[in-house]
Length: 156
Image (cartoon, rainbow, N blue to C red; front, side):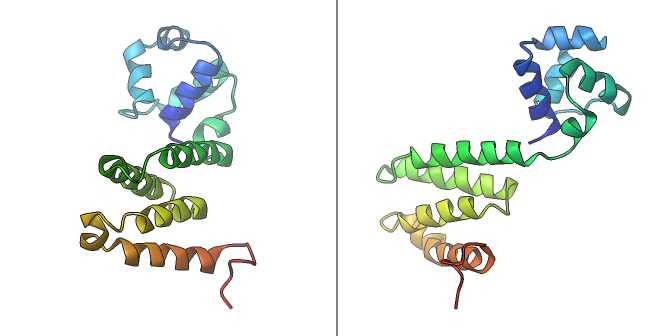
């Protein structure tokens, strides 16, 4: 989760508007808006006050939290699973969603598995052959098997 996403999350959790947060920090609401859209970052001199206003630690704001990643991954996976593989446009959107998520979370075995499953279901679509989805699925399944802690999936 980006700093902007964290700022937005904790601001909303406190029931604050961008305007109110900006006022507390003696800034314009446009500055807060840019942070939340990841167009800019808060100046280092304001991090402490920002953390205080949001009632979080500086560490929470500046470091990755596995809980945020897990929540974001579950949301993406649920969204992908809700898409209909039998509808070509939804299938394409599903693949794009999962590939983009995998770029952001390259270590998620669950995400890899979901993407590999999606690749495997598109046999009737041109992308299956053109983009070599079969090979990609096999590579993902192999990577999962080699890197999982689940002994049932380990290769002999």
